[in-house]
Image 1 (cartoon, rainbow, N blue to C red):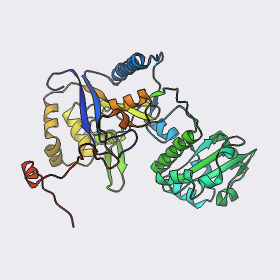
Image 2: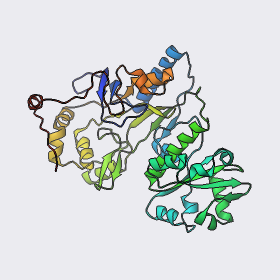
Image 3: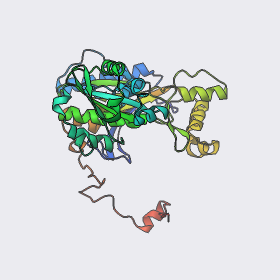
Length: 391
C-alpha cells in the first residue's frame, strides 16, 4: 500500500503453529485481499458479494438478504464463542444476579472474584438426558471438564418446581425460581445446565457442551447455511499472569473512534477501544477474518506500547513498518479466507483433511514424506540457527 499498489490479492500457502482439529491444519491455503481507501462497510459488502457468487455458481444457492451481523460482545454473551453456530438455540443466559447470593459457595466465589454464572436450557432435556451423563464420569460432564470447567450443575424443571441437588436446592426461594424460569425461558420438562467460575472458562465450557448436545440430540439442521458477520472485536484482552494487554487479533488492527492527540489520553482511548475488525462465520466455523489496518506511525507505536513493547523493541521488531508508515500510508484494510475450510464446507466433508492434498496427522507429520525430519549441523549453521536445551 505504501508502494502505491492500491489493490491486490494473493493465494498463498500458509503455515501456523496451531493445535490440530477437524477444521484446522498447520498448512493451509489462504486467499488474502487488501485494498486502499476502503471502509469496513465496503470490505464487508464486497466480500459478502464474493461469497454469495461462490455459493451460487458452485451450489446454485441464492442469498437474497444481507448476511446478519453480531457484535463480538453479543456473541460471547449469548453463545460463549466468537464464531457461533446460529442454526439452533440453547443460548447462554446470565444467572449471576439471581444465584450469586443464594449461599452456594461455588456461585458466591465466582461472582466475588469477577466471574460469572451462566446456563443453557435443553428443551425436553428431562427425558433425553439422564443424571448419569451430567454427573462426574458422564460424557457431558467430561466435555465441560475438558473445556476447563470444574463440572456442571443442573436443574430439572418439573411443572412449576425445580429439581436439583445439594446447596442449590436448599437455598432457592419462590422469587429465585421465578427469576430462573424467566431468564432461562425454561418450561416443564426442560433441563438447565449451569457453569460458574472464570468468565472465559464458563463461556468456553458451555459453548462446548452446547455444541456436543446439539449434535447428540440431532438439533442441527444441516441444510442451513447460516452466515454471520461478527464485528466490534475488542482491541485487547488482559493477560493477568503477565499483567499486560495482548492484542485479541493482532496489534495492527486500527482502533475505532480515536480522537485524542494527547499521549496520555490516547493510551486510554486505545485500551478501551474496539477494533475495526470483522470475521465471517458459517455454521460455527470461521471462513475468514480481517480488519482495517493502522496507517499512522504514531498510533502504531502507541498500540505496540500497549501490548508491552519498549521503544527499543518496537524499533528492532517493527522499525521497517514504522518507517514505511512515516513515508505516508493510505488508509487500508482487507480480509483473508481459508480456502481449504470453505471447500470442506461446500462439499460437506467432516474434516479439512479431505480438502488438502497432503494433510498432516495428529502429530503434524506428513505420512508421505515423513516431514518434519532431522536437519544436519551444516544446515543449521547455514541459517544461523543453534539448538539449545534448557536444563
